[in-house]
Image: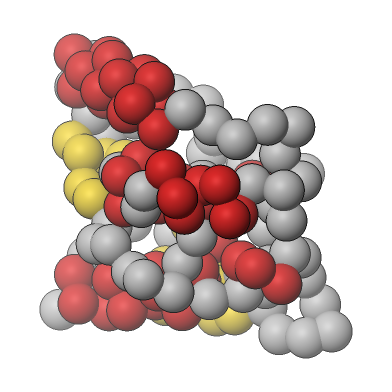
Length: 147
């Protein structure tokens, strides 16, 4: 049975947040060192500092009543998978799988699709080549308008 969604808004009270743990995205200091330049980072992130910052951020979300869910680790997904919102767009009908612009991120939507299917969240559609879309590049301005 599919879970109902109320998701066509980028303002208001967060009820549930899907998170990728820093350790699962970054994997190790060695993995960070091999990835950050190809992903156009200005410098390699500090894994320990990123983990500590995420703990504080998650505590803040929970203190405001948000329920946290975590994406499982996936070996084929890299550092940028930390930005969970990029790989999918959430709407009232379900999840829209994006088609990522960076080749290194192309497996992220499929990884999330597997998660959503196992948790009962419907897949409403997918952006296919030659189109590209990243969820972090759009914003719901209300229940219908999107920018």
